[in-house]
Length: 152
Image (tube, one colour):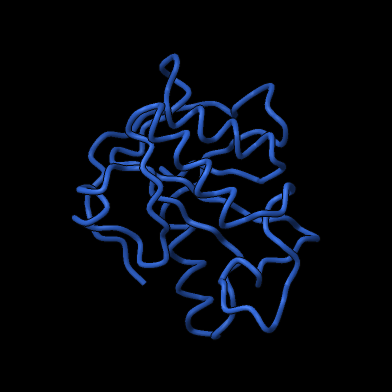
């Protein structure tokens, strides 16, 4: 597993206060290390990785297991939520494991809850500027009971 593309801008951000479970930042090296370990041991990393860049950015390079859910505008973020609800119809996040289902999400344990890792082009904080479409997407995932992390 490798991450293709660049993240030139780095900004600081505090925990997303006031939201259920909060949204924390996670370093890209930690996520990639976990993906490599899971691949080498042939286990599920128990991560749902979401690329919120536009389609052009996703096609230019992304983490191999990432899902594309563009949140470039508020309308696109609302569309991404609809896609999320279709993919993960359980109101509390991922469904319980089902060995007969090929969906990668079904391997995520309900006990610990799904860990959703979100990243954009710059690794910039979506909460540092007001009325962000990425923030809207993350807030919606948080209210649905998902553990959400934003990748630097």
